[in-house]
Length: 412
Image (cartoon, rainbow, N blue to C red; front, side, top):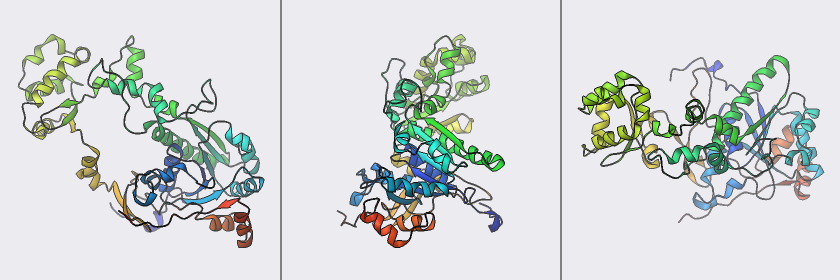
């Protein structure tokens, strides 16, 4: 990437301070994006365990790759918000904050005395974002909601199940798109609110639901349904086609020119004159038939990559369907540096997914290690709350603050 003036490479959100009262994925993914853009993110965790994602057994020595991935560069304050002294500490941090993000169940923040009216009474410029399964109102608002429930209710599982067969049962998508989709919507709304606040000084409250966000991301599926008398076959527009040594997906038939190219590549001139495939509408009506003879064509090749090269040469959009190990090693992923290693003091070099942000005039990306529980108690309370070291020690002795460092263990 071409280097610009170093004075201009200050991260876009370097003057923004975020209080992060989130755990697991939907909230931490959002606040990590804010951190990637340069914000100071202070992770407020509850004693004695903190973010529940810390302990998912996905890495050696009791560490969680899930937690490492979503908390790089954040600072941890382990604070008991159920006690009045803990709330007083938090209120002092709110005075110096720009953004507060939480993903408790609706009603919890109000019960703690930490809802938007309470916090904006302290800091009218505060931007607060609540992320929940179903949002802050509606008949399902108080129900527990996770990515899987958003996948189920939004229609995603139903559509995903029909990628290969219209009669197939629903399937889980295999990744928490409900969580990350909500995170992306929250990140965008927070960024927009920060921009508006620079103009008028006004704070904002943002209500993000996993279900709303995923429903919004359902691409053409919902519009095909509402605009075509109830059709339910949008998944078939993204086929999974089997070859002899792998699977592929491709986009074809959007234009008549593409369809003629496909017919030429497959040496099937009869397809161009076939009335079933004469228009885009007709081709969509007969996708099942199209995919059968396309899959038969792919299986004429011992190596599916040979078929995909022909599609590349003809300008037909296609891709081999990769496993996770294959995706990690893909040359485009490597060229974009989407996997990087963090130098963890216990685990050593640990690979994590990099930030997707690429900016010309500003720094962006992973910066720093994920924090140990309560690692930054002293720094944050002293710098932002005005607490002396003796006061901080007293808060720890009284159970208002908590700190825990996981010791290194021998790896097997």
